[in-house]
Image (tube, rainbow, N blue to C red):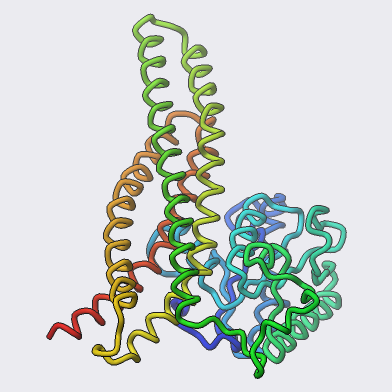
Length: 374
């Protein structure tokens, strides 16, 4: 049985590693490309990744080994966003893997890249990748490379990759004179006021992403209605099946733009949530440690804001959930619709998974508010 995601871990000591990469098909015919891919990547997991993680007391999990009941796409998103560590096999530049990797990069959390020599995507060639070949001796060598990366990361901290630096506005090289702004002890850790300002700005940006997703859903709804009318007219006119098929293909093509808008907004939303989480928790911890009589209006407003935000987002989420359920029926219409439907459904699940943070914040805010009224 797979260990469930922990609520909170020591930041410098990862305990759960999620592995993303090609999986193949274990039920495919022996000798088929899908079956060979399954056997190869299973060997990579069992001979390289899992033993390297086990050496440091880290549980390694693959998507096909998640035993818990539930929607597998949503579970994968949760593991990508919340796992202490991710090992990504980027061999061949699999589109699903690259999407999942992009989502992980937005969180800024530790990620180790591996890939088969000669099969690395050119567009991320600048990112350090532990390469391997299919020879067993080379798998052992790559395993030692993963062990070295884990040891260094646990000892010195995992360095943010370029995408995370960009999203967090962190510069690789310190600007001249930057030390002049630091205090005498060199401690530039954000204070409570800094956290409040960052949280307010982050929440505003996050709500903009929610609005973008809502607009995209409305666009999809309008396009769906137009397509239904067109198909109905063709049916009543006894048009051939090929005409109806062409109409559905046009509908699928029209879905590309709102689907991409949803995907981009969902990734941004999840990334912002991951970055906001530590600041919100730090601010809540400060409020909890402050006696009620010493709290000011800003702290009370902060708690109220978290509660109202959660209630508002839950309402939006209920509408999105209805939309996601309707997507399942849409996918049955034609093969042309399967990809946009899958992409939209994944975006919805990414957003829904990220929103769970808000519920945790609001629960603690309610607890702090209730505690002071009894």
